[in-house]
Image 1 (spheres, protein in one colour):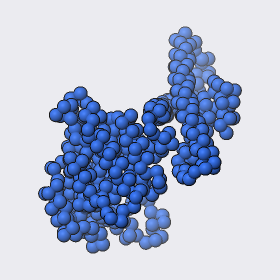
Image 2 (cartoon, rainbow, N blue to C red):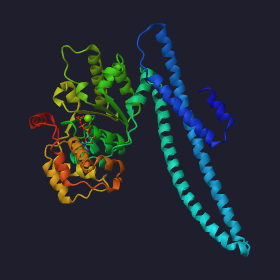
Image 3 (cartoon, protein in one colour):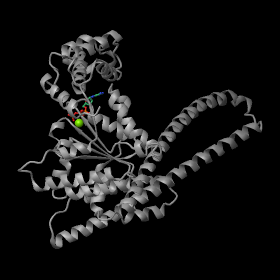
Image 4 (cartoon, rainbow, N blue to C red):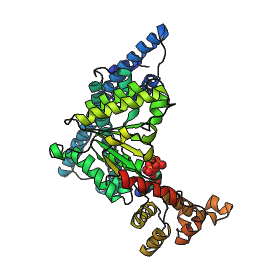
Length: 459
Ligand code: ATP
Ligand code: MG
């Protein structure tokens, strides 16, 4: 496939459709190459060397293909722009004809007028449609273009990193860097304290680095801790979307199980890549399983990964000029190694939602329901009676309550009912759902968090 593509392009150099087709084929090719590069090689000997060479070749093909995708996208965009200009010119020359005053013969005039207005309506509609489509398409193309451009830049930047194997660097680029366009701070109910801290140490310094230097330099280690299901991961995803930084999303499980024997090198490559592509945020979800206290029977590979991580972390802390933040999330903060804990200087608790946060979460969840007419009082009552429910318990409760109106219908009715005719949600649906969806955390386990927070929580 790779050999036939350039031929196809040379033959049809001016044709956008063929270029679009080629673009799709290149995208497929890139996916396949990435799969190939993603295969982890272990062992030694001739077979291994051959496989390594093949992977290097795939890496260089990948970077060529990405460059080609960028060029094609640009060319398509230019041609589309040219076409829009041509259309505009031909329309204005048609208007010019009208201005010459040539009239249709009287016997045809009525039909012509009718058909003219009819075709004008069609023309207007299709113009609006095509304008809408072309704006959307060009927006998509320009987003894609930016992503591609960024990807090519990243590949170029990391391809010559010292002491980093290009295979590892590529794995980092393909599997660890999050392109995050999803959750925003507005999707997260309450948590104003955590949001404000994140804004202060992540988002604002990324926007105005020159303001946050010297004593104002932001912290390099931030730990989000708290009971499960209250939005730690959600907050990190929102940071990925809103901070203008390269976001590395890594989990301990991936390091220890996916790249067996390579985890240590991956950690090293990740810090080198984060340094090269700064400002960067390295997020480690469930950080306790990576940086837990050292145990007697600990496996050697895991110990080495942990040590490499702490060395990398130290490098980030000691160099004031670096704009890298290491962010961890855990629901078992007491299992963290002391050495790791001291590096996370800011430790922010993400607690169970209070009454206002519960109300906010409920409002966000129900705003998506078309025929729900909760009053302010309903929201207040519901927020009050859901004490000790976590954010994810509330989401589960809302999902269960939303099924109540459907459960009232007979099977035959469910098959045919118009969704807009299903009755809206009521407070009673939530009260019924609360019989089966209960808070997932016991009060005793919650006190453990409070205790840890009062000892180690910074804020
Ligand atoms: P864990 O410690 O188990 O990893 P977590 O704190 O990382 O939990 P998330 O995965 O961020 O929890 O949240 C789980 C789900 O709960 C989210 O997908 C979302 O549906 C809901 N949720 C939790 N907190 C909030 C919130 N403040 N606003 C909106 N939704 C929330
Ligand atoms: Mg989580």
